[in-house]
Length: 430
Image 1 (tube, rainbow, N blue to C red):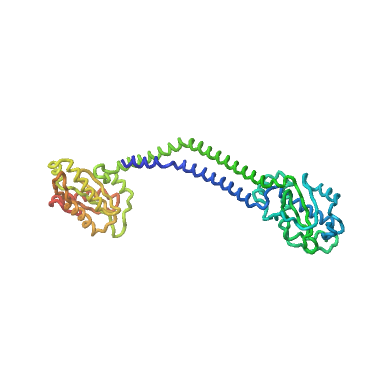
Image 2: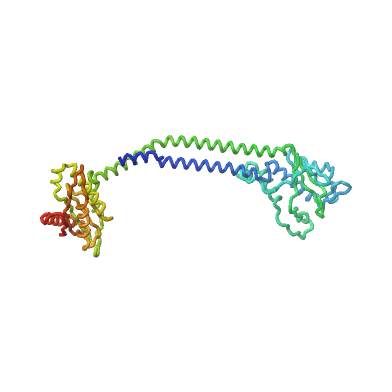
């Protein structure tokens, strides 16, 4: 009955192999779900909303750099017209045509004096979208795009001002960019503020693109693509999990069967070592337990006691064998309760029991055996309304080693025989 309960308990539990499969695929699903959330977070926090916007910022910075290199001197306004040094920039078609060679198709640049329009918003340079930069670095398919992004980062986060060089011809390169870039976004393009030598805003450079307003749409498309990819990967993982789960079913069944065999073997082994009537060890189980015992040294020793129920054959003849079985069970329970931890008790055969006392002092051997004899004699044995008085005689002998066990049994048996001759219901030490 106990074995069947243990088998049912194991069968109800999931296989350890299947547990590993479930945990592995669950962790993979969490990993890809984390990637999805991370990507969407980066997209929502990115300072620039599209690759096209990054390129446009780089273009307008390139225009500013071109103007500083081509036309040395400060920006100024004369009669409502912008000047760079001594050159008029406003409505300079030749300059616009020359700049168009360095811009992407669809990009148009304009120069205008005056204050910045009110319907613009400052463009944040908190950093390029990290996810976009990772994708670009991994793909490395568009070298020009990566170059523009690197240039954008260097200009957006300028280094400390470089001390001017002594060579007058190199003075144009010693001009440091403004510490805080003033770039504004408006419908269809961006604006870079132009400042005079004393830091006053006197105009702006405007760069327009037809596709510039599609940045938000590009951002949402990218979000949708990431979400779809994660869903596809998750679906593939779930399908693979189901396939592997089905494939592992025969292995799981073998594992269950293996556990059943182990439990059955353990149960059979336990049955072979125990007396079926009393539940105590039988002679085989007693000998196996004794074979692993290490005998003590010093003042403590070991001892063997043989317990024989007095007049047991007469009890069987008068009250019947069921009554005899009842008495054997009760005596076995008393013996199991009275022995100490580390002691070994068994039903030796018939109405005889053997106790092996481990690590006991010589002066305590008789006292320990006497407690068991007394407990057996005072117990009230009631069977089918009849009270039966039961006593036992116990023979005890010291046992010094495993090899001496058989001799100790013989000495204890001789002590038992002596106790029977002297009137029974007593303990005798050989």
